[in-house]
Image 1 (tube, rainbow, N blue to C red):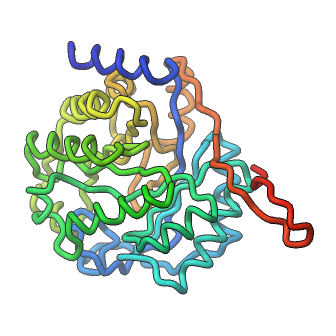
Image 2 (cartoon, rainbow, N blue to C red):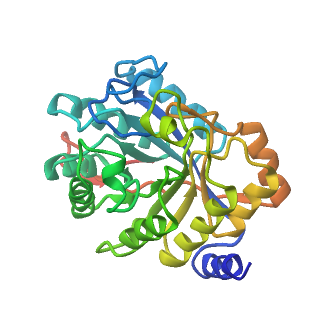
Length: 318
């Protein structure tokens, strides 16, 4: 209990009390990923029931973004199952960033590895956050992924930071790793040149047909261990948003309240997180009201634009 108390004091020293940041996540390209991440249903290496989908139309993405804003989300996150985006994909994702920002939402993308040039293009379009998780500790990582190295992930984070985009990076717990592995993951994040602005902590949702699900044979990380990990993340990275990500679909209200007491101040809102279930919006609304929580307003990054006709420089209107 001392750990939770200290984590809550740390949260309140750096953020407004009883305030949460709410994000909605949409898969804009699903499945057939060439990576072999052992937890992921979207990997082309695994035999799951997932139906692959090509890039969805910009109009459909915008309709989902408008729905997210109307239901209270302040950030709209878009994920594509790629090892990395190709140059031919960039006009599509850049247009999505610009159009979603124009709705007054913060934008986040997770597209796999990025080159320095791709990161700069996203920054120039006004992207607010880029998500690229480290997943687990450096030592345990080879048990999870073989098609992308730990240093590949760190290189992408360096490109994102250099471009001036906020970093969203965390991991997944409950994949068979030890508590020391969880500590090492948080140590790695805290000791980046600058800690991530946002740290999502997922509790594994094991998906049939993935190697990790086969390995765990139905075992699941205790909720108290997730709560403990959230608290340590808050203490290790006091100025970062710590997000309750996947894995809360079966939690009681009391367990979710403890995650927030432990220092979490962000969560994903919506019935689906890419390909996994999430708590319902109606239930989240009721829980926030019961706990007296306020939702943080969106604060999209302002981007300078030039009016080609007049040559005047201004800010992207959001």
